Image 1 (spheres, rainbow, N blue to C red):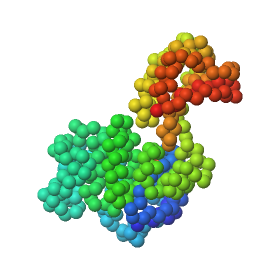
Image 2: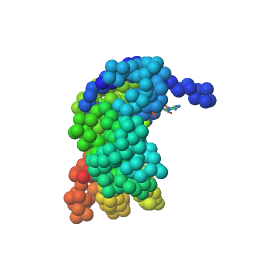
Image 3: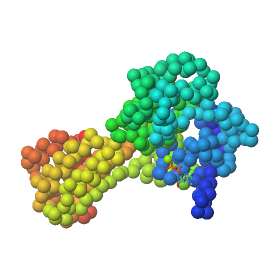
Image 4: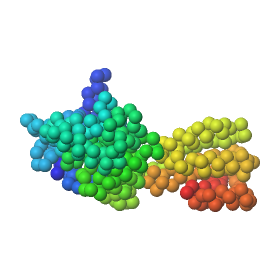
Length: 358
Ligand code: ADP
Ligand code: MG
């Protein structure tokens, strides 16, 4: 359905510098595929989507859609735009139109629908994304998750053959990520062809038929979710999918700033979308630093989170110890009952207590 051949994109910046963002992108996309595009930021994921629908005309290469080269002179871009819907990180709703008008505006103008037809269909689509009761309000009164669901309904109103999503949940408060992902999941079940740039590794693994790992301006590796996440062939892919987010504090003496740690933790749990783990983490860290391990200084506190497995752990590391400093008492027993596991193990330089959260 879509075939991309040797696509490249070079930007010439006003300061004279030149940057080649897409080097040589090649791929074929079949109807019904759900492809997640993952990769480090700055590797051209957004540029690829924008090049694909000619929002950012490529420098060279070919893009074939339904056996027509859309980069060929004379090709009518409107035709392609009707086939490709796009959902942006920042929703891009028309703020001066109601929710329903946002959805009906383009179909009435471009698909020659009567306002009545477009409204009836718009209401069906709003029902589908769970927002029928919001038809007559303006976007400003909606939450981010609701705005993004309207944006999806608006894309669907054009009956696209494929929808391109550019980090549809990145601008959302963590509590609203789920409602948007579940709408996308439903579209996948309905057989909609989709290309989704996302940082949500577990979502990508669950929903996709194929994964593109983009790196250095090319599709560096592609395969089924199983291949890319469980058996990546190339080391950069492996490093990316298994990456672990870390936050580290050195606790040298008792003048350390607990409030600063708490603020840092807060940002960490929000950034990686695990706010539900924050409370238990604070309680445990406080208990360990001030009570159970209060004699152990210096102490390194490390919080880790693995995107793909979803495992979050609190490590307390002390140099020079050969035995676990963790006492056996009721308080520790209580912590044990609230977490998945406590692992006590020697390291090359000392001893580590790893508390793996549920
Ligand atoms: P990703 O979506 O993977 O994070 P992007 O496609 O947004 O990456 O950007 C890739 C690179 O291209 C970045 O270095 C970015 O600064 C550069 N870039 C993107 N758009 C433009 C533009 N319009 N002009 C100049 N440079 C750009
Ligand atoms: Mg991007």
